[in-house]
Structures are given as structure tokens and as C-alpha cells.
Length: 374
Image (tube, rainbow, N blue to C red; front, top):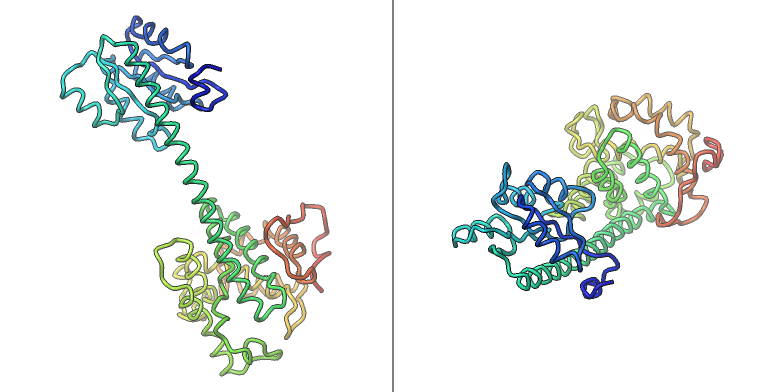
């Protein structure tokens, strides 16, 4: 390992791209740098971009300005327009010596400007300096990403735990929120939602019933059917939930609020609290409605036994187009085996469970319905 490698704390040498259309300049810079760095060369702007956009981009670029075809300024602009490559430091090495040339070079994104004929000690010193700065920048960005991920994970866990807090009031284990969150994610994946939207839904669906915290025990825990007046009280929980979450710029909380407010809307407009119709109901609310009802039917509650899977599907089928979005219901058969495995894995008979590090059973581990709660 060279001194340069040790100073950067690396086990592999850093890579310098030399982009110049003059062989003599390439030879000079390559000879100067090759002892301490890996050197790649490009004799045109197009070839330089191909190397930069490859799976092994350079750590620093020494870029000539006057090249045939695409000049150095254009190459620099292209690189700085690419979010995945814009951080790579670019040093212009050029015979263009005017102050205006240097100003333009720095404006398009270069970190430094060296004029020809070059001074080898100056080139070496500036390469070392900008590589060190780039390493520090990347290390800082990595730490920021790690911390951001930690904070996001903490927010996710807080939201899930709040969702479970509401569920514990009318379900001894609270496993319902785990199951229905997984169901919602399966449906989202099946309809082709992207991974970010799918995970956003998964991480906020558990807050759908947070408003139940505000429902009196006499109504929420009543073992028999609710009276008309009691139903009026129960139907306040979506708006209570929206009020508990509040209005925020944060996307996670915005989504949780939307789901809490709209998961009891019905496709035909007969739902509550706003009587929204069809696609006026937010997509996440329509997905959670299916996941929530499926789990409610399949699970024993104080006022009813668990419904067998065949009867559950019949009830949901009769309500397609009434309660549920027909387009979403079309994908239900394709995800049903996974939904049944989730139902068995997080069954209430297992007692209170966590959704962290508890694997869903693989296909073939149990027959459909074999482990469903009785």
C-alpha cells in the first residue's frame, strides 16, 4: 500500500481519470500519478463521460477544456447534472489561461483550475488535497445517511407503536395492526406501486385506528351489537384519529393522517366520515379498507367468532364495488396465499408479537387455512 492509500485509510488505490486529446499530456500526467493512484485515460469528452457513468467511476477527474467534439465545459456540466456523479471533484488542466476562462471553469462546477504547462508538484499537491476533501465529504454524507435512516426508523417504530396502542384497547394482543399492514403492502405490490410508496403505506397503515383512543370504553368494548347512538360515537374515530395525528409537512405523518381519516370510506359513497365515492377516496385508504376488513372477518372478536376463509372471500366478493374498489379486489387472489401465511404467523393465539425479526412462513410451511385462528 502506498502512502497515499494509508493516508486515505484505503485498501485499494484511488482512481484518477485523465481526459485530454493530446497523447503527450496524457503520458505526462499518467507518469506523474501512476505511482500513487490508478489512472484511467480518455481522449474525448464522450469517452470521459462513459468512464464516469460506468459502474467504477473515478475518484477525481483531470479534465482538458479544448477537446474535439464535446469540450471540457460541456463534460463538466453533464457530470454535475448527474446526481449520482456530481460529487466527483473535477480539476481543469488547460492551456486556456485567461481569468474569464478560469471563472467559467469554476462556475460550471470544477473545484480547481490548473494551467499548462503544468508544474508536477502543484498537480500532485492539488490532487491530494481534493481527494482528501472528497473522502471527508463522502464520509460525512455516509454519517448523515446513517443518522437519517436511524431517525426514519425511529419515527416508523413510534408510529407503529401508537397504532398498536389503539389496538390494545379492543384487542388483547394488538396483532391486528401487524397483519393488516402486511396485507396492505402485498396489495400495493400486486397493483404495481413502487417500492417507496409501498413501504410508506406499510409503515403508516398501523395508524388507521388511532382514533379509537378517543372512543369511550362502554362503546369500544361492548361485547354485543352497538345501538344506533353507539354507532354514531364509534364512527367518530376516523376524525379523532386525524386530529390526533394533526397536519404536518412530514410525508410519513401526512400519509398516516390520510389513512386514519379515509379507511372507512366505501367505494359506493356510503362510508364515513365524508361519504367519498370511488377514486375520490385516496388510494391508500382504499387499500387499507380491504386489508382491515379481511383481517376483521378472519379474526375472533369479543362479539363474534373468526370467519372461515371461504366465507370471508364470499362476503368481500359481495361487497366489491360497494365497499371495496373492484380494481384492487382483482389482485386479491394472487396475494391470498401470502395473506394466509401472514394471518397464521401473526395469529392472536401466539400472544402479543412484534413485527421486528419475525419471519413470515415460507410457501409450503402450512396448508392454506391450516393454522388460521379458530
